[in-house]
Image (cartoon, rainbow, N blue to C red; front, side, top):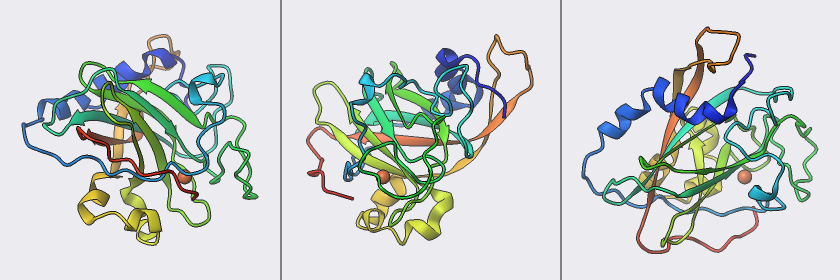
Length: 236
Ligand SMILES: [Fe+2]
């Protein structure tokens, strides 16, 4: 596994090397429905993400000197947009998820799968002027009753908070057995289901290796509505 040496430059490198800007250029002025909300679930980090020791955009290890977490590394590129397809700047995007074994780092997660001490189970990011964010993580494992997913909490200035979940196109067999996924309307499901394909992630400028690294990369478009669309949190 190639180390990810310069974590601070990850966002800009991910955008530059994977054609992310192309997606931005293709924005039209069409109307898009808001991203569907979903339960926050019981495993939101304690304490809050920004009170954790590590919460940067590379979840695959705790810091530059730490071992790499188990599992398949992926990159999620995100865009936060309004319903007119305009990027939203300075939006806080929190993510949290299970590790490769399907275990959360949370005292209420009592399943017997092993926790991964090298995995950073969460991140907190801020969108730029282009509405973009990106993070590098591990494909989340399945846990009882759920298809693999990543939780999101999106907090935009002067807009209601959105809590939602992102799913994987590759997991369609499990997705269609997942009650939370299937309670969405078909078009809502499509909007929160992301396909991944290998894209180049350039090595950090200070990396000894100059070889190109490819990781499965997917784009998640989050559309915020002008009014609230959040449900009360319920156990899951
Ligand atoms: Fe979950």
